[in-house]
Amino acid sequence: MPDDRYAAAQELWEKYRALTHELIKFIDAEEIDLFIDLVDQREQIVDLIKALPEDPYRGGPAWAALDAEIRPLEMQIRYKAQAWLNRSRRRNAAVHSYDLTGANLPGGVLNRRY
Image 1 (cartoon, rainbow, N blue to C red):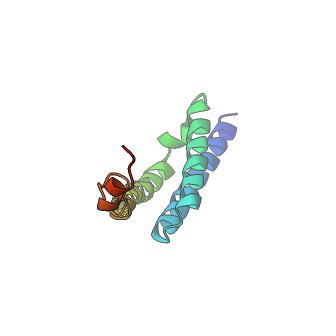
Image 2 (image 1 turned 45 degrees about the vertical axis):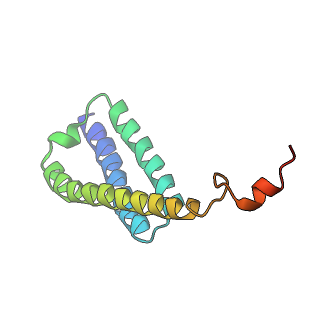
Image 3 (image 1 turned 30 degrees about the vertical axis):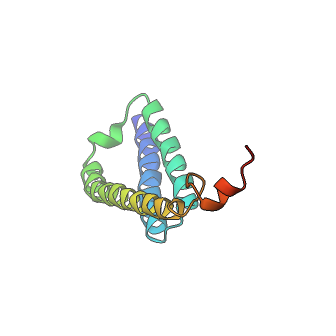
């Protein structure tokens, strides 16, 4: 029976690895909607991993290789997502700097009724 638990955990971790690689592709292409969908899918995989009564895969020899592969990718994802968010905020601020809703325009004073 432990082999079934190991196989189930290994399958979930492989899905996690595949989704992590896909996240890199979509953040590089700035496909943010798909990126967010994949983040949600990866969170579901994490929930399934946490729901396992035990995770024998993490104690196995294959875990070290998977961990060494995933950790740098997660750091890249975090860095690239933060960089995208900063760019998006700057663009948004630049667009809103042209809004005239708070400006006191001379024409606005002339059009008021007293």
